[in-house]
Image (cartoon, rainbow, N blue to C red; front, side, top):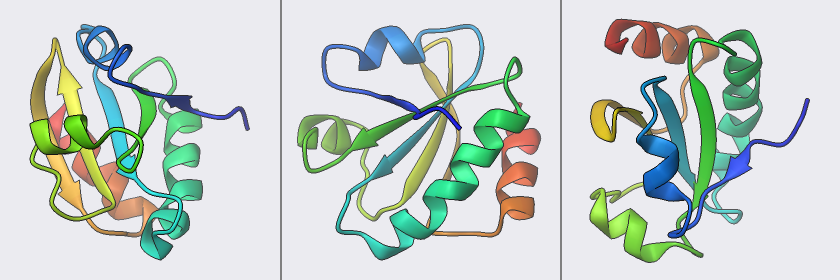
Length: 106
């Protein structure tokens, strides 16, 4: 599967401004639960292509974005639409639960 878009301070606002909902995975390479959730996020991206966009934001490289969106624990997944947060989950979870959370917020 193709790598997900890595967001930076320069690309973040433009990406989440989309009318198509965008799921952002706030993560860090040293985070075990983040690494465990990463394949699930990639599967969701493939299965929901055309319905949502999916991107990643490394909190170590983008601390300003993590603070701006009050990311206190990782992994944190935030669903945006038109630049506004419409859903949030914190922590690793099974694919079925993540899929249900996303659908619930669409």
